[in-house]
Image 1 (cartoon, rainbow, N blue to C red):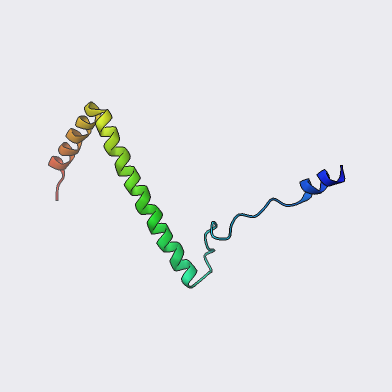
Image 2 (tube, rainbow, N blue to C red):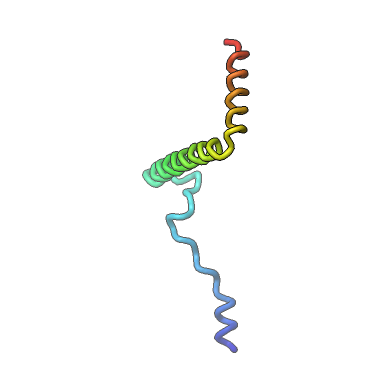
Amino acid sequence: MPDQKNSRDEPAPAAPAGSAGPSAGEPGEFGEQSAAARRRRRAQFLRELNEAKELRDRVQPRRARAARMRQQMRMRTFRW
């Protein structure tokens, strides 16, 4: 039984060092890497979002047509 107690008392394994973002006070190359990683993740998210919108438009043509009509009406009534 003592072995089981020790395994429960040990702290959980820590996450990999690269998975956590840098703190606000860390200057240097690591912050630049995280900014680049953030831009990559954002670009990937936007690609997937556009793909999902296109898929939705294909599978719901009536809703897509109504959305296009609303957008056209907004553009017609927009004042510069």
